[in-house]
Structure formats: C-alpha cells, structure tokens
Image (cartoon, rainbow, N blue to C red; front, side, top):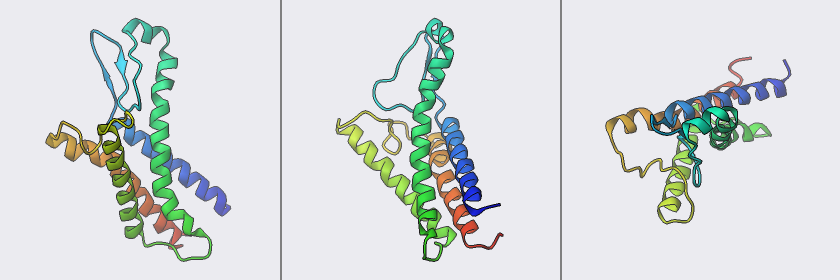
Length: 165
C-alpha cells in the first residue's frame, strides 16, 4: 500500500473517531415539549419544534452535524499535524510527546474559546469554564473531547516511527 494512501486512510479514521467521540460527549438534548437542540454549537442555535424537526429531519440533522465536523476537523488538525508535519526530513516525535503536545494544544484552544465566549467576543460552547463542574462532567465528558485526539496523535507518531511496516 502506498504511504500516502496509508496516511490518508489513517487520517480519515482518526477524523471519524474524533467526530464520534464528540457526538458521544455532547449529544444535545431532545425536550418532550420542544424539538431537539444541538450539543455543540457556535452562535445562536436553531430551535425547531418537534413538528418542524420531523418534517425537515435531514436538514436539521445535517445542520447539527456540521458543527461537529468543524470541531472534529480542528481536533484532527491539532493532533495529526503535530504528528505528521515532521514527515519531511526530521525524525518523528516520540508518541508520548506527540500526544501530550496535542492535549496541550486542544486544552489551550478550549480555554481561549471559553475566555472569548465569556468576554462576549463570540458565542461558543464552554468546555473548561462550564458552570456545571459535576464529577460526571469532569470525569466522563471532558476526556471524551480531549483524550481521543491525544491518543490518536500518539498512535500516528507510533506508526510514524516505522516500528510497524
């Protein structure tokens, strides 16, 4: 298998896993008296009624999915670029260093997004400065957002060290 195809498939799998974990971490809600609301949204989210949602289900599902795809693309860029950009003429990063750098980059981006949102510069979901600091949120939800990117980055770096043909 040519190396470019192998890395393209690895990045596609990485991106899909990240989007899956994001949807699992922040799935949105569906109220009994209203329609669904997205879990991850920048700006003012649409709030369709149940009837509107069921009449235009594909439209709203694709609209809600677009923001997960954007966040997944950002996390993939943070994780994979740190691992793959060194493909040229330099040795690969050690897997742990690559994973730690990805985790630090995503946490920094989340913190800056939270600060910008709290200062009123833009409207974005709060990750680290969320009002709910329940143990469930801190132990289950946040690792689903940040750890898959870091682990994937470490796996890409591990594959990059040519230990696996």
